[in-house]
Image 1 (tube, rainbow, N blue to C red):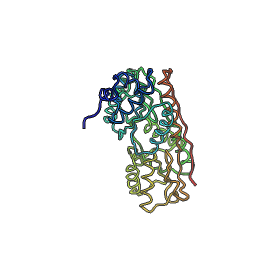
Image 2 (image 1 turned 60 degrees about the vertical axis):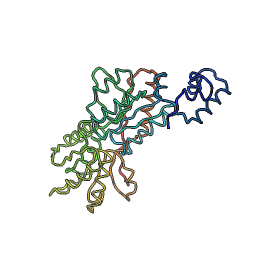
Image 3 (image 1 turned 180 degrees about the vertical axis):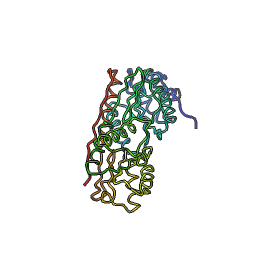
Image 4 (image 1 turned 90 degrees about the horizontal axis):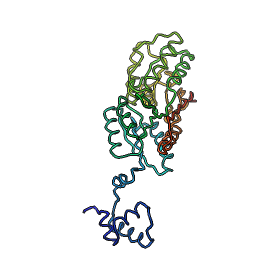
Length: 331
């Protein structure tokens, strides 16, 4: 069946295509009788307006592209929910994309969003796309970095992030003060700001207390649940096992807890677990004793949404916000 066109609607309603356009765009005067004829024709022909064609005329699509590294991670989806609730009130809708921590895929997604003529982009980067972001910003399209940042030469970028370095420094100090000297670290990606900053915070605390970092106790992962599982298997093979495992994101921590449970370990009696990021699943564990840095992802999303609206309203930036996670011990 052929798709109906605006010309078909105009013919059915016995009006001009310009009149149909005015009805669809709610612009200009059209009598109620004519409006009803156009609406009946649209319904009869099952006409679907061409959003891209309309955006070319209006130079606006009322859409915002959101590129995140892992669409299954509740942390990022809660940020996205905060963004959506904020911008939807102003008539904007979100288009979600997941890079799967793949910089090449991320670059292709950014180009796709530009071609789809989104009004702005939110990016939690997988890394290595500074030049592409610079190109987008120079075209006049707002880009807001969330969770992860990078520097772009000659460009001040808007961002909503956490104090990764200081937070991880404090989390590591907490473990040291509890008497832990042998700490197994489940590292994240070092090619993104969150991975580097969290590892640097850990290193500063260890060095400050005079502990030499034994690299064999560092498991390099990529922020996935599978990494947490592999890290536990790796650490438990040591003759001298770590007394605590420090994981640098919630997904890896969940993998750590799963594997420790499978291996018959109790937390915190047999192994202390500390996490950058809190876990919903931890609430199901009785007296879990998990030490965690608690995010505020929804609030981060709201702030990101507010920055987007400021930019779309032609307000001058840059706008930056840094959140401070709270250190909490589950009881």
